Image (tube, rainbow, N blue to C red):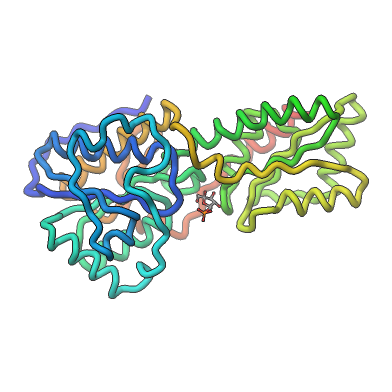
Length: 333
Ligand code: F6P
């Protein structure tokens, strides 16, 4: 079980801010709530920045109190809204952002998001010296040096629920279904969903599989009496891959239906797992900021909260456990 580290350092830091950036993830609200409430308990004022890094540039910040985050832990999306802000790629804008924070007396920032969010945070912190910590919030779970990210568990459970439903119709009609899940260029969601949903095949960016091999798996199933199949497809960098595979299967004589789950996986109430993870990571980020840590991510390793410098995360590809890919295949046969 994830534990909460002890933070007892006394810092001069009295005002901090939080923002969410990149794709939203269920549990981000629970993290905001934890940052606000733990921050207030530790004697800080807490600001929320609206629409991610864009809000830093446009100076859109609101002071949050304990009631601002009431009735929030169970909600999907993000109270603070989110954005992908291209202007932040430019140094001059990162400088303006730090100045806007300082002008309000804000002395530390927590950014909740994925690797793009952390890359921007790292540059801003390095260039301006502004204390920033990152909390991993992405359904993709593709951030190196943390075993878990906020939103992953919810997204997987949403997809599993969809697959269970699709299986009913697939078996009623004796059909092959290609179910496309999110994950950009990583297969964490797809693999977990394929295992949990008992999929016949999984197609992952991390492991190439040819159309004839997919056909062989379908054929083996048919010979053993299977009349329907579920193939889970990780979207990859270009969504719509499942439609292209479906067309290719048709050329081999296999008709299939495609279901792209898309953004349904990003919405919805967070699972208990994501609520607890977000609460612990959010509060820990405040604890570490007050302990004068900066330019790092607050992640999870072996059920412990850890602080990892941003520089150790970039250019590292988080590896899918290949043994699990093989096991999923064995169990599906
Ligand atoms: O990174 C999270 C994610 O949901 C990916 O899985 C997906 O490819 C991408 O965001 C979609 O982004 P957008 O919000 O631009 O549609």
